[in-house]
Length: 168
Image 1 (cartoon, rainbow, N blue to C red):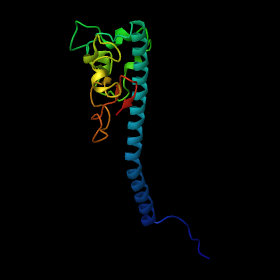
Image 2: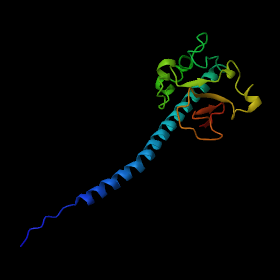
Image 3: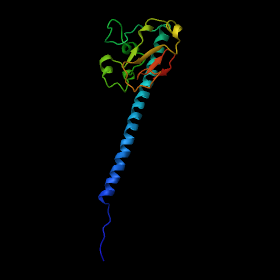
Image 4: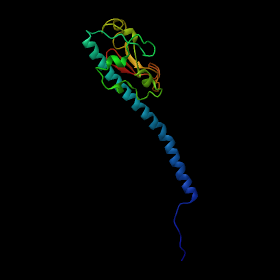
């Protein structure tokens, strides 16, 4: 009587390893896209909160937008978004886009840029009268932090409009 050991042959092991490598190669890009979409969604949520803080500001200032520097580093004669909205959005992390890997939040105090065309303007006034509040950008990402969604998008930027709608 011969004793026969059962086990996998080298070929069988290589086939299994090859299948696992193929599955990993297929799943990793999907997981990467899912993580990027998660960061984009968190960024949109932050923009919604910043928009609501801006609405509280304008309600207390008779419906007039503040005069802000688009980026604090570009114009130090005007206040920045972070200091203006601090009473209305006390958590400073709401101004940080999770996809900001360039360190702009650390340098600027925000990952979002203010549309300087709205400086000192009343809500529902010019330029909102010209293009409409649903097409007047209020705040947007400082840079293209997100994957570009293609034609008709904002080139990898999230944008909140004067009416509170958000696009990417």
